[in-house]
Image (tube, rainbow, N blue to C red; front, top):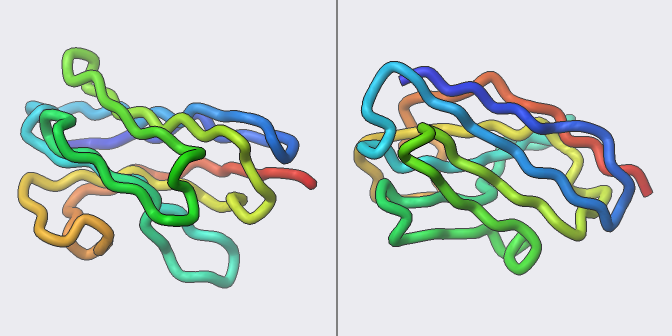
Length: 123
């Protein structure tokens, strides 16, 4: 499966952005999808994940209550709605997919990765 992340940009603190992860090449509904982010000089970290049918959703504590992950399998797309953005949310955001997952926050369990989209939050 090929993944294309989009929707990043520059926003002021307190603002919102919606990221999209569009998939092609395979039956998207067969894949769990996660969002990760990587800030300069830091390791890639888990942000959110959603099961194949959307029945299970997970968030990092740092974004819980501010970010919402959702998916539209008919459109082969997963979204990450980001509200109340903070400067510490600044990072390159990546979407990733996998058919089988046991530990949702572990990046090594995801087999396919998009190219990343830059999110910059100014104070």
